[in-house]
Image (tube, rainbow, N blue to C red; front, side, top):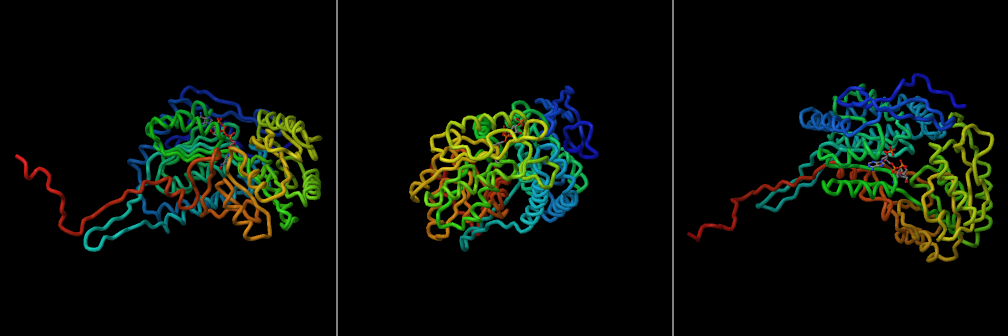
Length: 498
Ligand code: NAP
């Protein structure tokens, strides 16, 4: 059994206008922890009325409070304090996150540090922020007046929840907006840590509001609220599509970071040891519950048999263990429903590919959410396990002969989030990268991302870009202001008539 972290609250509450509160109707939902699948806490469950209160508080803070008017340097200081607090509590945060989500503790720790870095990065960026000014000599000056938008609705998924939340909270707040966060209901625990962190850092009441509850009720109310002009959503592609339909009548700004089925392409001329390390890590880290997982590995035929055998051997040797165990490499999936979904794909895979590792639940572990890292080889491109996002520790491996064939296979899904290319041929690497339909490509690298670079997908993987200045653009209005430097000469309407 995992040990329950010390000092867990008795229940999880909404945080509205600087106060922890229950739902108006007192409704709650049960939260389970993924090792025993037993209920360990209850969370407040928001209805439309609770969401309305949170939005009203955020709107009031935006319109009347100091946050949206502060100098960037003043906000930056508070954001750096947030980063300091998160950093100083990284082990406690990781413990809580790992308990709630089933992430291996060492990987949860890395995500806690990344969360601090998100705040530090945007704290620096808003101080360095500059905007365009244009001159028409002797006639006109034009400049961009950048403004926060208002109440940002942030809706996040259950994989790496705290980090996903920080990824949206940091730029939304840095730019002066107020926020209402609706985290995933499988994993509300770490979200409930933000209020104290923000309070301690000096964020004014009402700037950050947290509502907990079902996506279909609380999330939906946020998306349809007329006083929430922008929504940043990360989650499943089908939810994203539904959400854009719901937001359309109000013409909201939307950023949609959605699912993936990303290819990792290994050419025969690659550094095969490095490619092996990265492709194994790429699909099995974070329990395979990773939007950018390289879940389709395409391998050139000359090296196929050897590479596949070595890949499978690595997978068989992966340490599956308790989330609290620092030696665990893969741990418990987030929830029994999700585990059932992943297991059903494994059963489908048995009819679609050659099973070389895993194939079901991991043995000798409590509860039912531990799945053995599973490898299917010789998977055809029309297979469901090649086409559909499984979001667990399952990989489909497919051979190819030529660059053209590899590119066709790489692009042959509805998704287009990430891609990984392994080759020692520089021209091939770049040409191949340019041909791939994906928002991000890593060449001879696993998924290491500079926070300045744009993040997002194409096709069913998303809409819009966040990351670096793209996040600043998403969370602000760029108003252009024109000033005449000469006597204004306008066509004189209404002068010659009667
Ligand atoms: P999900 O089911 O789409 O849920 C995401 C969030 O949306 C949750 O907070 C959910 O609430 C809420 N929600 C559900 N229905 C809603 C509705 N009608 N209106 C408003 N909000 C609604 O996704 P998930 O299963 O949590 O996360 C896994 C998915 O996220 C995978 O597809 C993965 O690839 C994707 N993901 C993408 C990225 C990226 O950056 N591209 C990163 C991480 C994950 P409940 O929890 O209460 O249902």
